[in-house]
Length: 193
Image (cartoon, rainbow, N blue to C red; front, side, top):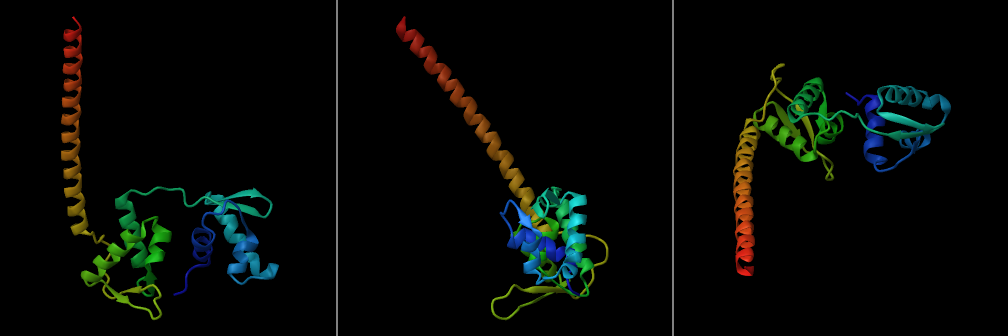
């Protein structure tokens, strides 16, 4: 199943034109091989929708600025987003970049989630020739219930516990340093007398 047109436009702005303050319609149209105004009409409609949602801001006539989806997702929401996107594309293939672009996750997070889905037998990895990115295809639908990466959840729990231990130790060290400074200050006062 081909990508929706809006997603192609979004990826051009997120990847090809990343870091540019201002984007013109022609910048996007050239990358989509659109020449005539008639060919560009879907682009204009898509950009109008992006402007309404606040994903794109009009700077001046013909000049836009990409702001992104503007919603910061919590890690649990990102997992839900990846799972829903995978299930929505169960008849076609999916790439890591699809999860990164649509779910606002880091590439390593998307790769880890897809590897977990492959390990559990829900997806199959399809290696592409010439060092192209791998595609993933769902081979067994887990149903609507979220598939969690329990190994990662346990790892994160251990990391949070370690962080609390380190913070407690740091607080104890700071307290000892304050007491030491106070003792040195007292000794300095006593020696002056």
